[in-house]
Length: 323
Image (cartoon, rainbow, N blue to C red; front, side, top):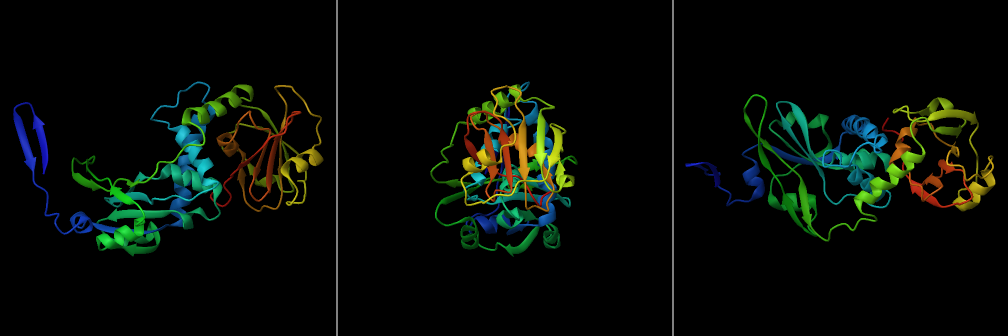
């Protein structure tokens, strides 16, 4: 039962029979499906979230990271995605033929930054009133018809809690919202507190504000984009070719074509090789940290260097086929 009170007035809502389990109860509101996120839906969502977040990130010198922005959470998820997969599916509800993301857009952002074909690695749990709408949202869709199927889909090695709610839409109609999947397991121990994640980027932005110089070495300069217009991009010639088996520090010493400098305005140089994908260099802002002078992707196709006498390297991710 649900109790609603207003001064001396009470209203009690009795819920439908829940004795037959969670999924049987949810069937009163629609059909429950799980599958991988449709690639076009994933790309559109990734681009939309990134276009919203990047201006906030670039303005960190002037804003505080409140619950509205949650930039520390997003930056940390990007670092998590370099080494791990998500334990819970992202969730969405279809209402009046429109998809409402309930949870996981920040995970879509992070996965898109760090994984190849990330839509194949994001499970989506979705509630919809009409089965025929699933095709545009899910690939390899499976309908969840029982509690045991839902437990298997979510992972039986932990206790799962599915948050749901009733939603009043613009037409003043009551609609069911699926909510997020939460697991009762050991909480993630952040590599760094979220406020430190944010502060690292903020300190970098103070030293390297809008218009900072980025010298790019690539065979295909047409593929280098900046969706934010943050960098002063200067193309300097073809990309460097190197032995991926060598150490990153060894490579950076050997490929350096600028003199080391302690100048706060020292130039960043980006070396790009072996790619046919468009690269958005605005994404570099998610990873910037003055504690490091070198940033490289796992496949070594992208190496960013800030010229200084110190050399400390950090692995990063850049989206490839999401743009």
